[in-house]
Image 1 (cartoon, rainbow, N blue to C red):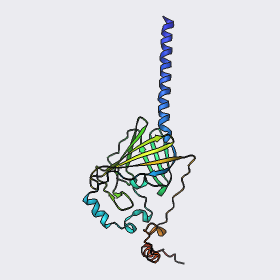
Image 2 (cartoon, rainbow, N blue to C red):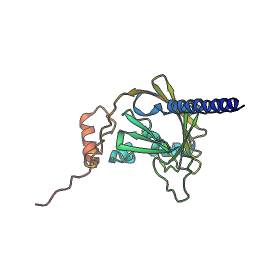
Image 3 (cartoon, rainbow, N blue to C red):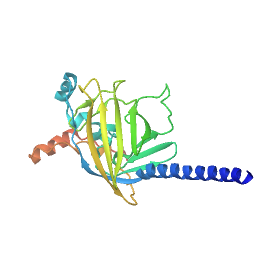
Image 4 (cartoon, one colour):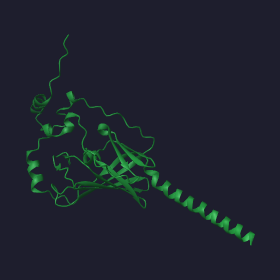
Length: 245
């Protein structure tokens, strides 16, 4: 009887060890998003049906003065995720950090179920919560300020019900991001696009330098008339302050 009890105890212990190994294996599989990535393919928006409110904003948009990135201000979350500059994902037990080389944008994805506190202000990158569903990482972001949806001037309203939902999937050594935007003011339904990224071993993100004194006009559409383009750039470029001697 004593031998049987010991055998049962041994079996139970072995079961615990095997179970712990399996759980560790699952976590290890989920953790291979870490590292550097660079966009391979940028998808187009699906289901993009704008409202009259959005069309009114579009009609008045002037990229040279209405796009904050022209003044070295980092774009909001939606445009940050479509940047073709490299990004890096850093996984920790309680959070995932996503670093975008473009404009030095940093995101924090809470993985411990921590909801946004009542005092949490709105911001261009919002408040992100993530969870694993099998081998798919789901990230929902709320608390977003109004910002540009795309380079053409389509707006994101920052409505309290507005949010983004990201689904990250690994396909062999390629990362797929399905990105959905919900904005009841500007879109008649949620819109989605899918990006794919290639892994970049030993990636090192470079510091993004943008000088506001030199930035205005850096993305003004070229008309083909070089003189007109130059005059337009000189008109919009901020004056360089003089240093008194």
